Structure formats: C-alpha cells, structure tokens
Length: 214
Image (cartoon, rainbow, N blue to C red; front, side):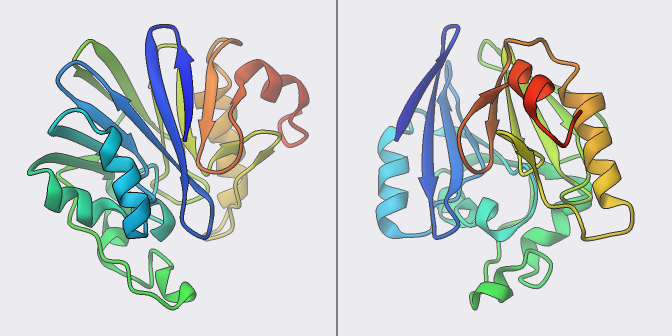
C-alpha cells in the first residue's frame, strides 16, 4: 500500500490481482470512496477493508473490465450502504463474463448491478469533497475519469508515459486520444494523475512528454 497526499486529502493506493490493477481508497467525512476495487484474493480484501473507515461506501468503476470490478461483489455484501457507480455504456459488462473479459482468464466475474449509472457529466458532493465524473470513451465505450480537487483517476485511459489500449470498436483509439486531450489535459499542470495500472504522474508531465499526445 502507498499513501499519496494531495492538498488535505490522503489517498491509499493498492495494487491487486495478477494484472496489477490499482485500487484507490479515500476516507472522507462520513464516506469512504473506492475507485476500481481490484481485490481478488481473500488477503487482498482483508488488506483493503482494514483501511476502510466508514460504512457509507461509494464505489466508482472507471470501466467494466473484470480486473477493475472484481471486488464489487464482496464489498457490496460487506457494506450494505454501498453505492456502485459506472457509466451507462459499461453497465452491462458488470453482469457478463464475456463482455467484462473475465472468461479470457478462465474465471467468471459477475458484479452486482450498478446503483448509479452515469450518462452525462455528473457532479457529486461526498462529505466535503467535490467530485466530477466525466465520460472519457476509447478504452471502452463507457470509460470515465473521476476528477477531484487537484487529482484525477483515469482508469485505463491515461497512464504515465502512455495511453490505454483502444481497439474494441471502430475509431476507438481516436476517441481515446480525443478524450484525453479534451477532458483530461485541460486540467491544470499540477493535477496528480492516478491511473488504473502503474505509477502516478502529473498532467504537466503527460502534456510535455507523453509520445501519444504530442
């Protein structure tokens, strides 16, 4: 586990499952917020829930691939006041091992249904934290990025020094690049980027050095 401090907010970063998928936890005033619960084993789940401080839980799935949604079912079971959030276009992936690609790993991941389906740009107030959810398609049709004050969760859309795979539908890669340039790179240089895999980065670094964005 890694602790990341952005202004007054502490973000806990875990890296779980065989695909080394990042899971993030924020304990806010009265809420705990999880982005991409990638916990697959009992040990990983125990490590995560040990750090969850509130029973009012908000889970954001940045998209519907199995390694980002695998922990939904156990967390929904353990925390009855959980709200599960995903974009409308990826919501059917939660329930379908073929669409969420878990069948390719020889397993069957089925998540509970979403409680909130994002469609348009959405703003939420969780405790004292303002959260903006924006649609950033490309990696999947329903990929989202989740923007807080001075940091953004980008899922598998933008990584440190590279971008996500985008080949599931026609024009997906162009859509991915447009999503990054029009929805993410418009943030200020000092915004911290927290991706679905790998190391964290900053908007300034990706704007200046990412070879896919120049």
